[in-house]
Image 1: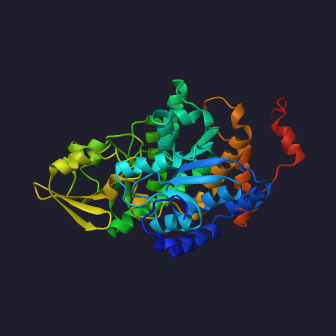
Image 2 (image 1 turned 45 degrees about the horizontal axis):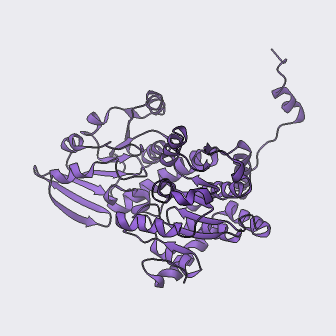
Image 3 (image 1 turned 60 degrees about the horizontal axis):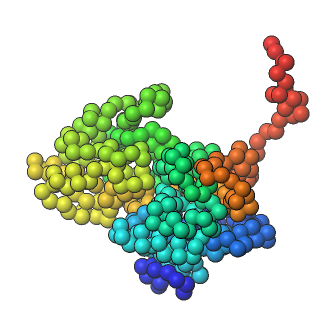
Length: 418
């Protein structure tokens, strides 16, 4: 076994089965693996990755390795690692430092271990690894050709760093690719968040008052899936355009101060701290379920809930009952961390196929062009989005029309009129 720290090496066989299942559902990434293994597109690259250790991530790791890179990996959330998958990766030769239930110190210790390889490329989900290089391990930055970032939260922070002149190497915003944010964030987050809530509670969603904080890609996906399950959905927003969109999509829109009194289930999906705080807990009805599907656990102010509780009881896996002084019970799922990954398995393989295809192709681009790029955040071009979407459609058995030469000429003929 390589340099690794995982929970239980004996889980490897089960992890391999999960990875094989994911590979059967990720045809785009598997096609890229076959192509770039022949090209050795990442030969001589050292990739440090910090991303949820799931069966889908394992397919990405194996694809990076097949393309010629050396890899060292850690999980990007203390509760999202699937221990059997981590065991399978370790058993098959990947240097990995990840286990479910890490402390904060163990989380950053794991990231530091991945950096011991002195990476030439970094891959992030939430930018914790990049921030570690920029704060604690700045001596490594000159050797890093570039990095990639998977999440909305991470991209926002990296753009702020670039604007302040603090970014030490170029980063590609994988999150902003159409074939990532319009599918992974919407359909993946929507389905997996509902999955996590149901696994942790086994409640009936039909007829429930379901409150979603945030109506970006992720919040929109959660709201759509909750409505599909028969819930009565309310959206809380600070952006007037997003609030208007939610309203015209048929959802009730109101401030959290009002929604707190009517909701049965609350999901935060904003990327901002302090969305649900003490005054909201004080207004919630008995039995309210509260959870988060944003990247960090700061959206729900958990110390406020703890201060109101006279007793906390672990009801079932990923479900804590907070008994308040007045007898009301509020249920916190997954300790306020990503409910879709902590209480469930994360996004389905089919949608991560496109996201991780973008991750892989971005690493290939950086290996080829990174030394000539500026220290800024780069977007993925429409050509890559269309190529990935075309392959995905073909694997789904879908066909589309093509423009004729006359239609193409018409689109570029500014002289054409009525």
